[in-house]
Every structure is written in C-alpha cells, then in structure tokens.
Image (cartoon, rainbow, N blue to C red; front, side, top):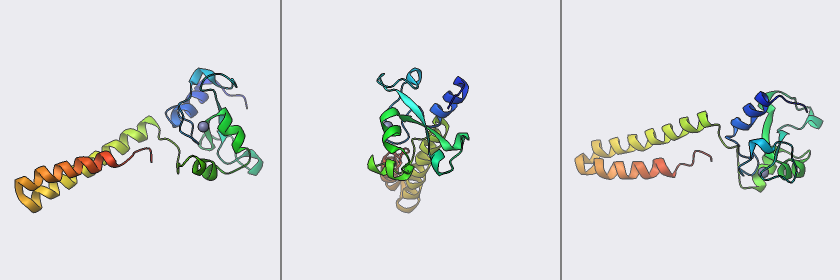
Length: 139
Ligand SMILES: [Zn+2]
C-alpha cells in the first residue's frame, strides 16, 4: 500500500508511535525497512483478505515481525498473545485518560473528607492519588 507521509504520520500517532499489537516503540523513519531498528509497517486491523478496508480506522502501526506473524489472524488474538486488550492510546486520548484518572482520585479524596472530616480528606486524598495512579491509561 502506497501512503504519503502525512497519512503515515497520522497512523503512527494513533498509538503514539507504539506497535498496536505488542506496544514496542517504533521509529517513524524506519517505516517499511525490515531489519532496521524499530522498523514498522501498517497493519490492517481487519485484514484485507477478510474484507478490511484501507480507511484510517482500520490501519495501525505495527512492528514488521508482529504484522507478518499476525498474517490473516485477528487483532484481538495477536494483542492477547502480548497480554494486551487494546492498542496504545493516541497522545490526545492518553491525556484525557490521565485527566479522568486524576479526577477519579480527586473525587475519592473529596469523599474521604466528607465522610471522615479533615483527617479523612488527607487519607482519602492519599487513597485517591494511589487509585488515580494505579489506573493504567494504556490498559
Ligand atoms: Zn509489535
């Protein structure tokens, strides 16, 4: 598939430059260069052989080895082999997830304060911060 660099960049950025199957960091400039460090290709999440399209929502950055070993297999099972359930988030979605986690943590802190008074607020804030930090935005 021939792609202009703007489209390649867009696909690369969808997962912040990480392989959508194994989450390894990819080198943007090593697109389509097998053997190069952190080389990558574009994977059709739903393979073309199964009717997958060339639309951007079906395209993800993947290491060459991941992409080639996936072949016509499903994205779900390829990710599962790497212990993943979803693709790394784009920078924008990741920012939002981190913000939501922080908000969740803050709310727990607030609740601690309401229920237990000032000491509870401190305790709650601690628990809230721990919960907020424990939620992995990359799942
Ligand atoms: Zn990979």
